[in-house]
Length: 482
Image (cartoon, rainbow, N blue to C red; front, side, top):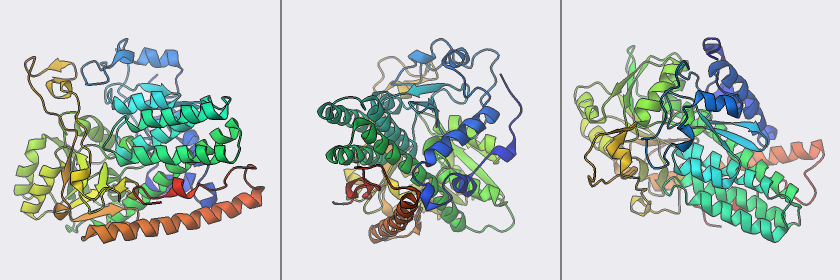
């Protein structure tokens, strides 16, 4: 079951991976098929337990794995006796078949690898709401695929019934978590493809195919965007001479949170693979411990030197001159640059400003919401109390203790040194910079769509009655007005 030791040559990062699955514009639609095959092959080598049937997965997980609570960490299973610790560095999801998406249960890492099957939007909403999958980009991708899977399930229903089913599926996903902007726009894009196909008189099968194409496009775009972001962030890191650069990060921003690469952690990996000495201070990220459980695990798999610290130790490290830069992700960036990210980010930004340390938000433009004026308008999700009072099944506070558990906080734009995006590093004033970056991205993608359309015509043209490219409503930048 343990398989051979991990082969570093099979760890595909950043532009190399993006080049394999989306080397040309004509490959954007359909890239998920290549991602599926590649991730399954690498999972076989790196994880050993991936690719198992449901009976084998149940054997890897403990008996109470299927009943892990959706509201806290208390019921997560311990590592099964005799099973190796999971290894590898990969996307948080893969396809078991065209109709089943397997999502890694991130609540169980690093002790146990459990994959949860998702066959519909309702099941997708459940894994998102329960934080089995988390991280704004990954949430958006899983939501898009979940919508497409529901479209496939409804392919034989009459058109009016399909419209109702798709609207219900979209609502279930959109309500799963309110703060991450990627969730809403990904669902709207896939739903728009169904509506366009339905309006064109397409069959249920053709509409389902259009939805799947859009979900694949969303994943492929994220793959390309995150690679571009990693390159831009690498160039922005401060010069520190011959010594290692010391980066502090908060929460988890690697492939588990983002899909194929990573955002803040993607920049770290880009530096590591460019041969630049790097050391990462990893905030544990209470109360859900994404840093301790996930970021430390991913950095270990990638061979990047790192040290885990309590969240409250970050300030003293800055005061001692042991932090050169802070890189964090984002669940939503407002039109003025105010940024919602994992709770604790705001405190880091204040400390960074006091100590004169660069503080970078690392976010693809898919996480920017131009329709949200500023941070005051960003909804902040409140999580259940037992995430604070219980750690991995062990209660740490008296029963009945009153708890406030905001999952995110908002960092004002004035405290942000730069926003690292797929269109480069943006500087204040962020409002105009974000609008200009959005325009550049749309122009770049319009060129990509045109090239892909030409290639499709050369190959025989699209399915009759279906749009060959997404509708304007489907491709609009998050938050833009149509």
